[in-house]
Length: 213
Image 1 (tube, rainbow, N blue to C red):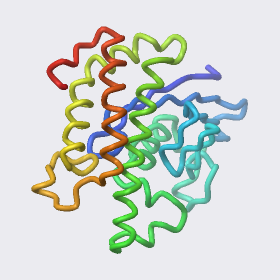
Image 2 (cartoon, rainbow, N blue to C red):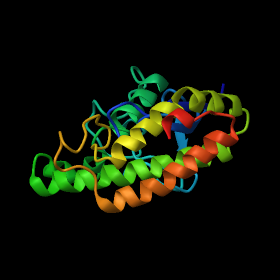
Image 3 (tube, rainbow, N blue to C red):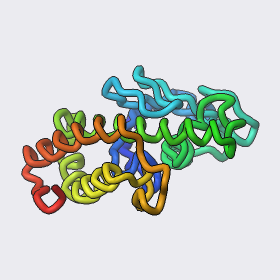
């Protein structure tokens, strides 16, 4: 097999939770001596420092970014499963702001953590836009998978949106009373608009969202 497509579900506790992300994988003739070539289906959206609108992915394991010997592709031990797990756990993580080169030095600092919160808000907004994009234009031959995913997760997605509109931190179940920082006013305005579009998109797919509105 020279080509494959993989779908990754965003993990809970991250700004990508319940999102569905598609990656096209090409195995070069010299695989596994060379790493696979992986393309992210972005839909023209940038939701992570490592994932570009063009589909380019910056990841040491793919040899598209610098890294220690233990982080780059090793023909003897590296696998495609390792690549997919790295994309889900290391790229689509809880605080993607710190994925940006050099930003890890800001971890634990007030300004860095503040920037991380803002980045998470934007990452969730873009993830929501990617959901709308997939609902309207699912990848060919993956229409059933997309529809089934959102049928199962629609209530969770909408409940999370409502919690964020009430002040819960992105990826967290705490309300504003429990977390004084909460979400920003600008984020709430943007999310309110996307929320109604999500409800409409789910309805168009025959997904009942009445209990979540």
